[in-house]
Length: 230
Image 1 (spheres, helix red, strand yellow):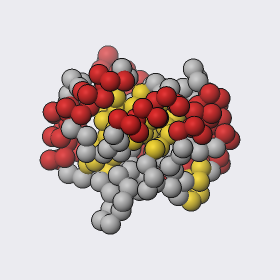
Image 2 (cartoon, helix red, strand yellow):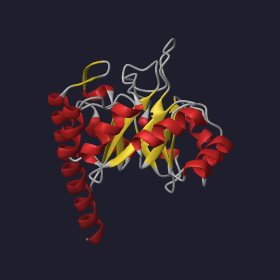
Image 3 (cartoon, helix red, strand yellow):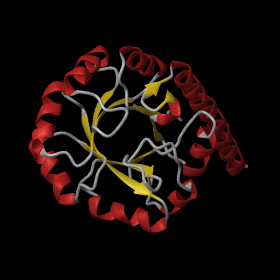
């Protein structure tokens, strides 16, 4: 099983290069002034040119208006837009129509009722990113380093294409993959030494953990198939 890995909140050439070298399928640039991972569109565009064609380039915004999106799309030329605010299904449709780009809609999850928020976006968003609800008092919709109960995802329809996010690190990754069954993950704070500061050693450890977990899950799947064939 090959797991898609999105490294989000990148701000330096070293981190961008390392993410792609390690095998990231997506790299995310955050355009939200309140975030320690915020980056200017022109700076993100220069970083993206280093790895264009090697990984999907994702522009992450929070309730951005069209003027801001115009600037971001012009400077970055992203492959995808990630909407991490309170954008309605109608707003998602409008953004897709204006920019002609696939959209990842991020949703915050704490309990089973939160999963029902996916329904109005099905057939509109191209993919979902399921993140943990931010702690009380946080001004950040994501990147808070907290997780939700991954067992909730057992109730999710198998046809829903999503990336799992929220507090993922090398320490809990194997458990997250085993419980959720997801084939795509997103991390930001899990590979940082401080908010907004990507740690190359932690990035190495994260990808090592992904590969180890994949090996274990593949062996378990093979064993199940053998038992079913007996």
